[in-house]
Image (cartoon, rainbow, N blue to C red; front, side, top):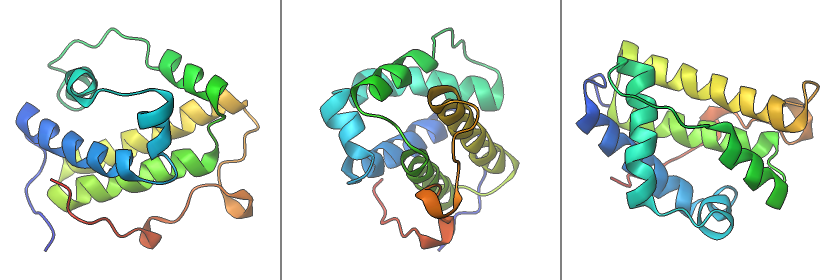
Length: 149
């Protein structure tokens, strides 16, 4: 059953982000970037990333960090490709869709896509392949996400 309520506050973001990161940490394609390479501590990361999304969706939080630097460090350790960012987008969309529906939920998905493409282009160069037969973004319809939260 699809959720019908929009993202309305920080609590919604916390639940959404826990669901997303639960899926991302366990994903065989992108999980190692979080768990092995970055060694992400979710309890430390969650308030920071919630600030980012609260700022993006509600304009009510401060976020003054450099979002590019950690991705650049990951890319140095193991190159991030369109397939990695595509999987991130898949999991993000599925997490949002599993919990919310409405204008903010749509904006969160659109923003996630823009961020993924911008990071990919900045890391791999403006001519980076972003889809198609070269292992790029995987269609969202190919994803089945089990409930994590």
